[in-house]
Image (cartoon, rainbow, N blue to C red; front, side, top):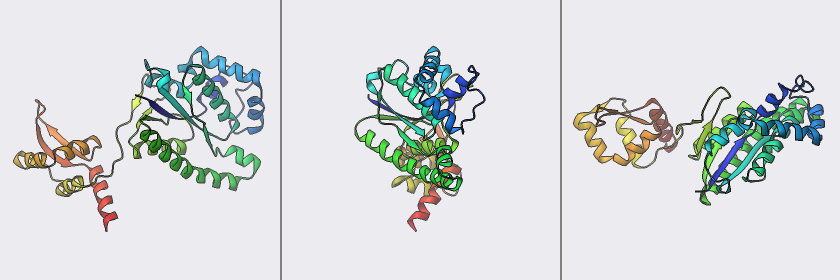
Length: 277
């Protein structure tokens, strides 16, 4: 099946490169002028690309997580969309990672850039930078929701990789993935393997609302009462269980004997009922 990976690009590649390069180790990421000069320096870009090639998994958190999730898959079946900030330091990372993906046979969609604060602060002022940063958070969410919907309609399995970037951008990317039922994956530099995030967001509907209403007093349904609900709402129970809106108690043989709503399920139920009023 074709896959579409949306990857948040942070500065992990440049952070790791700074550790072994005395010329740049003390330059803060906020120094737009100096990083802009390096962005225009082809010899520097080749140098950091060589660094990435030596050990891609250690060099970049984004490449590390991506390569582990697509292991043993054909690059021809995989397309990548990179989301970065409009800062010179992040642009260095993005163009280097983009070059790596292209040379390894992955299809690259036109990357997106959003406010990274430092560029706007340097070229305008602090108030404009704050306003643009906040505005672009909403822009990111809208863009990602549209993009995921479009790619799913085209038959892609969509993956969201919020490993890198500013924390607000990470949160928004992950939220977009949860809202659209994507595969959201993450890796920290200290982790040895990928973390696939659980299904965190789902708005119940139809018979699912009826079931949550039955359970909304938070009491455990067991014995015959549990069996009756399982018989009446079998498919709904399984779906809501995936999203941790209900929980099922099992005996050692795996037979269900108890059913109750979770705090998350009660919160979602109250949210939906409030919207109906």
